[in-house]
Image (spheres, rainbow, N blue to C red):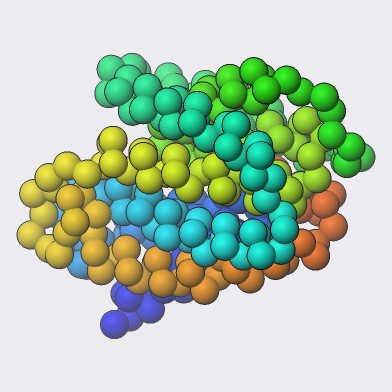
Length: 259
């Protein structure tokens, strides 16, 4: 019961971050799951693998709640979603195919460096641009494919890359967060299908490599937390939201290096 309560609280906090800045669910879920899963019937040596797989399912649950709320608030750019998401799906498929064939440690360091660069740039920028810069459809599509590919390679949500990309094009932060979360929903589902739904060999309630009890515990918390985060995103000043996102990017970069 105590373990389930801890999972629920983690989901509540992670969902709040997901709804507010578009990332953070996996950042909270993976370490909490890695610690909790051995108490839920998962061998310690398999806990990190099951944690990553279960986290992707949790992010999907939280994303649904976040997207529904952002849509009600009118924050999502649906025309950009339709333009980008097919190419993001192609990217995540390609990344999922290649992820086991490339040196993971090198990839982690490369993307950690990228996250540090983007995070510092967003954190230190003094003025947020609120007027869209002209960008071709081809650029958006290429970015969607590249971001889907990169997200699959490092096991992170596409929002880590998509939000800075859209924000850098002059989008308001809340619009970038909402549209990125919407693009990330089908991409996360595809990533879970392509890379995580294998046989686990774990003697516990499992769905492929997803731990059902942990999925429900954190997932339920994220369903409650994400709508509150989405509403906060519409009320918090864009500059503050941008800096909060930058801090999360820097924490994620440190986690990649240490992990």
